[in-house]
Length: 232
Image (cartoon, rainbow, N blue to C red):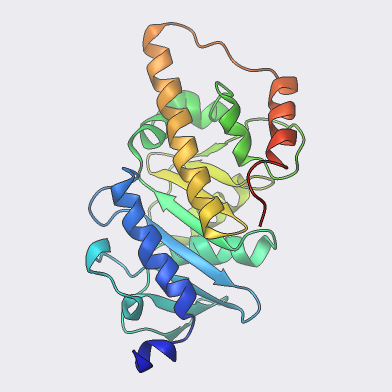
């Protein structure tokens, strides 16, 4: 216990363990897919899930701590192969302090389609507004979809960062979903709710042509989300 009390970024490492397990219990990935990180901006360090480890066998000691240049400063395990994707967001987005990457089935299925890679996730449900960051309508898709890039590469990290500009989420072509937020609870909620929206869209497409919400509808939803919940 004394060792844990003195561990670097203990609170952030515990959050990575907890929310990594939630990826599985909430159906947002399978096996060791996906990854989670939490930033301590004051110290310029991030805690990120280890590469290829069972989430239910991961302890805070297994979570890697990196600086914003990508150097490992603490931890005995190799960090996630997508560490660059996380740190590039942190370096360019002062409004982001947590990142969640999922292989959730409906978001991933949608990201495998030409339509999504051309047009993103259509506004079929007001919850898509959670991807917005400014409380007003966005230009273009609320959730963009970038083309496919090999996992763990700088190309993917750069494309994901650019695709998430002005947003808290992006679909990764033929890969999955990347979500972010000012804290880990918000980032995870974005990932979970957008999986729900992707599921709705995929199911609605099997029944007919989905009726989409207007920019005005989505703008109202974004405004209402600014005061939603219990605050921080």
